[in-house]
Amino acid sequence: MQDQDTRARKRRGKSAGGRPRKLSQEAVIAAAEQLIRRDGTQALTLRALAAQLGVQAPTLYTYFSNLDEIEEAALQGIFGSMPAPDLSRPEPLGHQLFEMFLAIRELRLRSPGALTGTPGSAAWHWEIKLVNQLLKTFSEIGVDDFRTLLAYRTLLGLTASDARAEERNADRKVEEALIPTLPESEAGYIQRLFRNVPDWVQQTGAERFRQIFTALVELLLPQVIQYDARRQSGA
Image 1 (cartoon, helix red, strand yellow):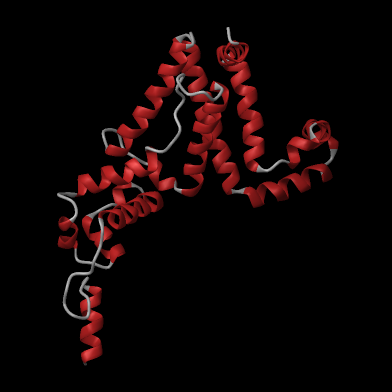
Image 2 (cartoon, rainbow, N blue to C red):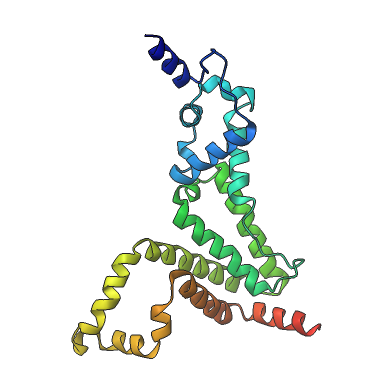
């Protein structure tokens, strides 16, 4: 009976001596970030967070005033470290752009729930800040508004579709093995691409993404290439 009481107290966030389980702000934030990454911001509730930490919900008020504070701190961890292009940084702008979209790709792959913020939500505001910084950089190097919109939507679409393709990587491998076995009348042009670009076919998902991304930037945003060339030459 005593063992059952002890287990019950632990489940309620109590130690064997009846004291509240020790936490920290960092532990609460880490647990909230994990919930958001896995299931999205809509899954972050005091009850769900308390259950994940093994405490009672009121215990969380020892460390934060409300759920909004916890959510903002968790989103800071998810989005705050995401690289955004900035002309004051020393790295080539093309590399900065790739870093940003690669980070978005990785977030979609590893934490799809983190990118499901509804309009007006805290997660949505973080996404808006990132997009605004990107568009500001395009404007600063002289990209017109139409090309900016076209390039942004194209690069974001590539990022999303590449993440989905990576998720079904096993199916793609089977598909790539089957294509050479099909009759030429059915898949001749696809087979030609496989023959003429064999290295691309064999690349890993991240390498393939980099190559396509770089080609699209060169095509859609020549200003980025020109800007990097001027900086490299010291002009």
